[in-house]
Image (cartoon, rainbow, N blue to C red):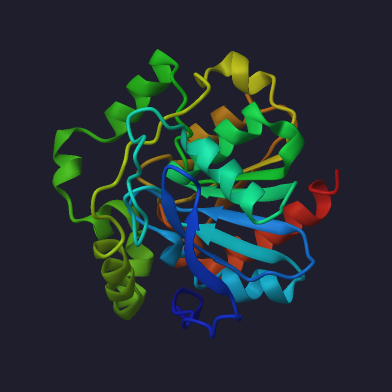
Length: 272
């Protein structure tokens, strides 16, 4: 399938380097410009290196695209306050350092935990929220039990590409699988835990004031469509999108569809 074999595009010019946040230096890239900022928050398996399919597309659409590696991931330090920091505070500090007041935030998988946390803590800063293939860190016991049932003990023994990339993509694009694996293997050295400011419950989510798009792949082993549709009922005014022939890494496996859905959503809902 040609749609599963999208070649890596040439990247737009961007500033790269460590951002000194005081207690930690985080590696980031930033395409700059006067457009609204879209910040991509990577999964636990990745880094700021996981968005080559998004960077030039969002720039072409008029946005300022940004991503950074969380603590302990590719080129980022763990920091001097590794036991007390909050991941959302790092995001806000980076935005402050770049002179950005308000921004769209796109969180993939574990990045979605941080995205939701900052949207709840500082909704005035977040124009729109996209949570893609994310379990979101919801602490409800019944929900946590469902997640554990979906991934019994032997699941963790599977190769990471089997856990995260759907079977259609693995069958159609072995070159893309190899590139994803290479980026995964170099992404994390001494990753720091993701600490959240909010305890994420159905009650806290019901108070969310930021326009939200929830996405998953139809072959996602972590958060399948039926579960995401149930969660969508808990998010006020949210939209839910299921991407076909995709596993857990939608932005990598199905970048054309991912980009179109996100750009369409933030164009409709992010003008606030």
